[in-house]
Amino acid sequence: MNSVRGYYIIMLAALLAGCDLNSSAGEKKSGIKTKTFTSSDNSALNGATIKNDIELEATGVKVKEVYLLDADKNLLKEHITRVGERIYVVIKVDTGWVKVNGKSFVGASERISTSSGVVIVNADDIFKEYETTGLDAVDAKVISLSAVITEVKAGVENFVVQFRVWDKMGNGEIKGKYYFSLAK
Image (tube, rainbow, N blue to C red; front, side, top):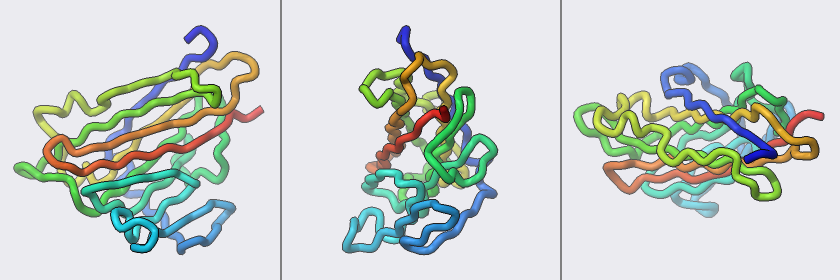
């Protein structure tokens, strides 16, 4: 960890519930690559809109939309950021989380590595503090995780973020990853 240090922050659903970004399948708006899955692509993601070249898998949950935001919470146009600026992955879920008394019990993990495989952040259960109380079921429909690189060694400029969100009361799970670089 001498060469690179990372830091993560988690934002809850309520902060981004007002964000609504629309795009058509395969359309590029402002250079943003978008794909809307059809049942022939992957039945678990049928109808999901995935932006920013995010690689995604889902089981037991219906994903509505997944995209990246920049530090100003605008749709990320390029996979480039600066030291100290956050990138947010926003996951909008249509259905699938088990609800108990209006609460959903989800877990989330995030792993940030350099392109050479050096792990700089490994957060196993970001929502652990909500294990007994749960999240409001409406808030759990929009999960936002953020990554920020606070310090790097010269020559390290490419990163991969792997994330997982799962239902602690059911079988719903979303796994994905995205890549980004630091501005030179």
